[in-house]
Structure formats: C-alpha cells, structure tokens
Length: 171
Picture 1 (cartoon, rainbow, N blue to C red):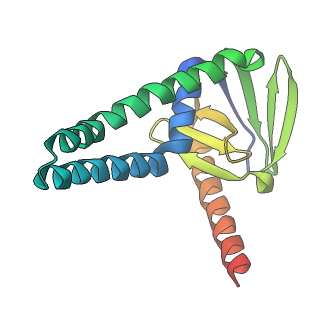
Picture 2 (cartoon, helix red, strand yellow):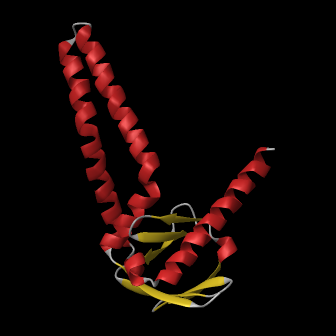
C-alpha cells in the first residue's frame, strides 16, 4: 500500500454534515414513524367525532419533523460553538499501511485501522468513526482516486469485522 495524504478544516458546515451522517437513517425512521403515528391517531380521533383533538394530532404530526430539525440544528450549533479547540481546525491526514496519522495545531494522533469503530461513506465524505459519536472527517473532493478506493476498501473491511463480531457475540 502507498502512503496517502489529505486535509480537512473542521468548519461548522463540515461538523453539521458529520452529525447528520452519524444520526441519519435511524433518526429519520424514528421521526417519520412518530409523525405517521400522530397523523393516523389524529385521523382516528377525527373519525370518532373529537375533531379538535384530531386536528391537533394531525397538525403535530405534520410540524413535528420541522420542530425536530430546528431543535437538532440548535443543539449541533451549540456543541460546535462550545468546542473551541476544534472550531475551524485544519487537520492533516496521512494514511500509512497500518495506521492513520492526524496532525493539527493541537497535536498528533495515531489510529490503527483495526481500532476504528466504523467508516461511514456519503456522496461527499468519509467519516472515520473512533466511537459512536466521534469521527475524523475526510472530504472526498480533497482526495486522490487511490485514497478514495482505499477508504472504500477500509469501510468494507471494518464492516465485515463488525458483522463477524456481532455474530460471535450472539452465539
């Protein structure tokens, strides 16, 4: 394997995109399911001649996703603003055969690939998860094609490792 380099700056937009990618599908399913439940409950209440409560449930079912989005954005913004050490922090990544080296003005970290929790891929980013809510952000536009191929392979490798670990725990 070759050594690859890339860089990222942790801006608010990058941090927000990371939070959305981490929470993505599971949160959307929960919000969608709850909204659908409220709308159906509202329709059922409407049918049983309690129109006021029925309208309330249906309106709540429609606006709940918007309210959740606004509250979520506020929480993400608050966390970013209170984490001064990483605001607009430039990160330099070096991908070596057995590990990732991350350098910034705050210091240097070395992470063995086997210690990564998960790799999330979106159309524009890779998120190298070091925990359930912590990740290193890799912008695809800043990567050479060979690095993108390497990160896709790493995502598959870690996914297989996690699947086999899940099967062995279930036994």
